[in-house]
Length: 184
Ligand SMILES: CSCCC(=O)C(=O)O
Ligand SMILES: [Fe+2]
Ligand code: NI
Image 1 (tube, rainbow, N blue to C red):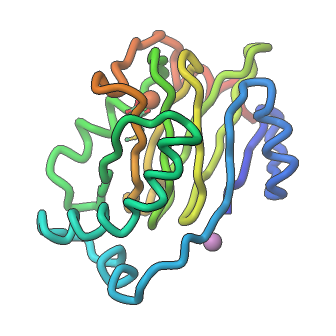
Image 2 (cartoon, rainbow, N blue to C red):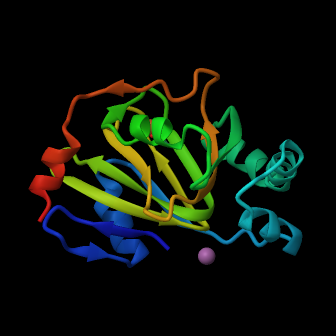
């Protein structure tokens, strides 16, 4: 389930409270357990996935993708799978965890593990959203954010793209450290 931390340190874990806090940015957050096979849960529990494993996982969510394609106009989807032993884990997370925007919307469905989105709200204050298994988030284009796995360093998620370009980051230079300093 998602948890939202406000800049004043208050945390919200009630989904409708979180949805209204993020409403001003039109960020969509849902929690839906799509209920899959036992075999799939075994795959999602594995760190090392073969190409075939990854294909199987993607195929398992094809039907949901087709539905989302109609509803939200997604173009394609892929699988993000990070674990402590992932090659170039730190290069990836270093890039993701810098504040950035992109033209395209950024949407994920969390399959396993967890991650944090840092988000700048229109009034300039910053919030952090923890997303976990079965959470679906849609961040509209041009919303300033960062993304990082939690200390568990485990995250598997479907990433939904609205164009072939993907999420080309425009780094904003907002210092993460500053935001942490501002957050009590
Ligand atoms: C790794 S998925 C989310 C990271 C991100 O914000 C991005 O790639 O733009
Ligand atoms: Fe992003
Ligand atoms: Ni759930």
